[in-house]
Amino acid sequence: MVRLRPLAVLASSRCLSAAASLESAPFEADPEVARAVEEAYKSLKSWAPPAGWDAARLSLWYAAVYGGLVLVYTCGPVTPISRVTVATGISIMPSDAPRRLEDMQLLSAWAKLWAGDELGGLRELEGGLSYPAGFRWKVGGDLKVSVRGIIY
Image: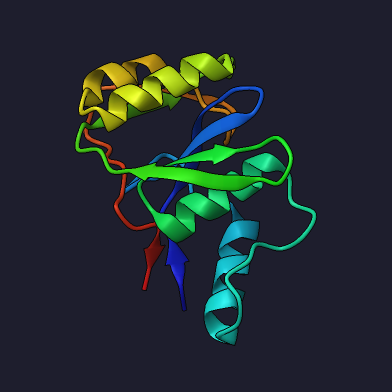
């Protein structure tokens, strides 16, 4: 049995998303993503996500498979383009409003993460989760981005 850590799309813009696997969260991994990962694991075939998934679910797939915080291109063929690990804790709480960034805002935050400004980059991304709905996140707290999304 393969289990997944909780998965979230922490931020999104018109053509990008930042998805993460989390050590713990007040929600579980998406059941469709969990089922597809388990099927790929058991079949020993290609680790390609199922056809027909939307950009949010595909972003969750890549966060599960790659772990960490994954930048995903979501216009055209949905494709992971970068992955980082972060040590800064976050907190997640209930909320009604997802936050939508501009592409350049998300890229600017990602550049800060790559340059080593973890707090600055994460602060630019914080806000309402794109997935799952009903939550927001902020820097500071006991929840950690997990290096691995799959629990073997």
